[in-house]
Length: 272
Image (cartoon, rainbow, N blue to C red; front, side, top):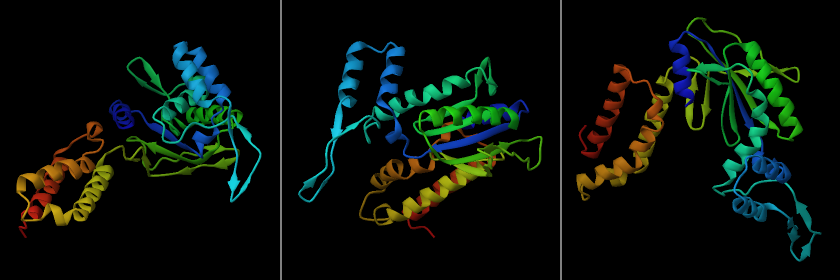
């Protein structure tokens, strides 16, 4: 999604200003009362609401060391680690913050204004200039502090085809945020040139590393080539093509991907 949005903005000659926010121990900071309030406002089905309340309400815990147990304390924060519902519950919690951004400018896609993207505790703020980005960040910081969410990492990036090496001085609590040339967001590398070359190079390198880890199987002459090709398709190609739906494929990139495929096949067939 972020790659498609950036590409669309650059097509219409708009700069893209990004602020990446990674919250520290975010899942442990979620307040149960805020989650329940938010679920009620969404008019969630009563049965589902009761199930979620049963999962989280009136929990207690104690610490046991050897034969000694501490007094039990109420647990009023945190969502379950590893639970498939936890990212959605955290997204609802972060919606309390992001709701205040609705009327602030971001990037226009058709008639829709997009000023943030998020998945679980990973958030990106999006604007067309640094002034708007600073305003978005100020709102998010204020609301995050109210909900006691602490960001462990914040970096900014400018993607532009009109400016050469544009600067972006963004501050939080009078501290200037680091401006980066590339950032890994949800497993995908975003570069300040707006292109996917860096991401595809990283994908290619990682796929070759994974190939080497499975070399004893993939190059084994006692296993049929069809079986080895299926193993390649199952375990190596998904690493190479992760996120490819959002790539802009040029002839150069196409040649690089085809060359990587040939690299795999030559080694499987033990051709120098």
